[in-house]
Length: 200
Image (cartoon, rainbow, N blue to C red; front, side, top):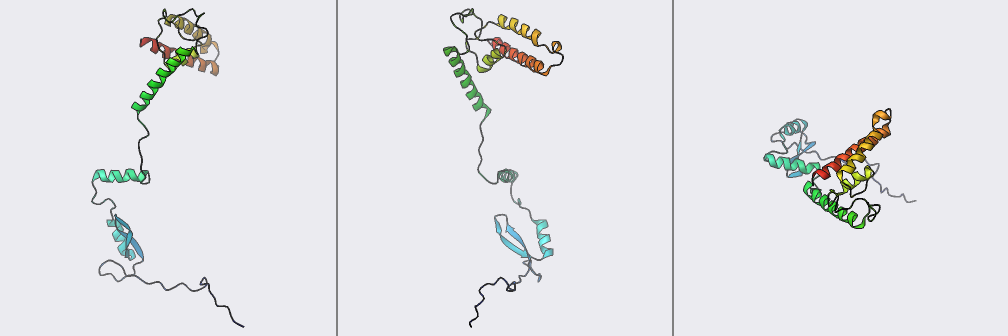
């Protein structure tokens, strides 16, 4: 009967390791510990004994020979894992976009009369009112919060605001949080509308 030849080397004893000598000049110790040769060759190693690898590590400076701005550049690249990056945008671009949006929204809302109940029956006409000719989105929204629709003159807005303040003042509601929040939103909306009328 033929015996099967063993093909697995799983149970074999580990192969004898080739011992390296320490790369430090004049040292005959075993080179068991690796250390990179240079910052540009991090995968190329010196092999040292324990004493000499400690000595080498104390002297190792990854940023040696680099100027301050080069060190800062390396650190910045490390924060994004050395991947390319670019700015998301700037405030100038946002302001330009926002101004364009506000202008288009004002044109849209005035042309289609979205916020007006009935243009023909309105007691205020755009020719006689002292309201801004174009209102940005924030102003229209603030008027909405006050329960008003453009066009309106400032005196009417002010009268309506005073009535809302009397109605929702926190002292009249005994610390009701909803009334307090409503009061805050009314004040903020009035300040927004006031700024819009002041800028005319």
